[in-house]
Amino acid sequence: MDSYLNIISLALAFAALVPVIAPGTKSRWWVVTVALLSGVILVAVFQVFSEYQQQEEVGKVETDISNLLALHGNGLTFDQIYDNLYYPTFQSTNEALDNLVGGRKVTSVKVEAVDSIGNVYVIRKFLNE
Image (tube, rainbow, N blue to C red; front, side, top):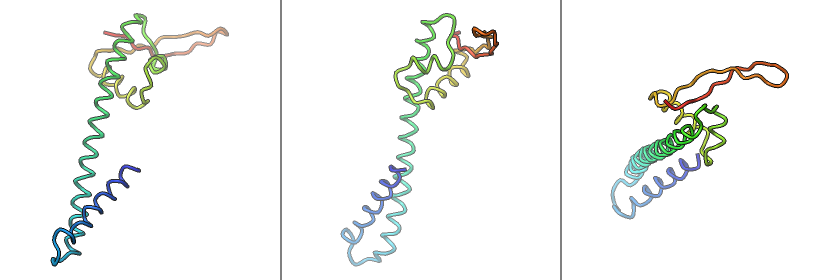
């Protein structure tokens, strides 16, 4: 949210330059037009850059997950994967694992785990293909 407020401030700053650059014109119309156009352009650039950064981070996390699963032949749960990664966001870890499973590079299987009392739990483990 803070980034969007900064973008709006920058768009208004561009619009404030109109009377300086073009004195004697219909400055009110040009100020509004420049503010709107620069706002739209700046928001679009910001969104594209944010998406690029997110995809880059997801790609790195995918590589880390593949390497981690290669070290553990019997598979890991999502919590074990998330705990062994170096401070990724939950969203990027979840998206990376979804991409790997969707791309058939990683499979998921359900296995039963029994605790010391005898309760049976079904957990999902992820394995390298």
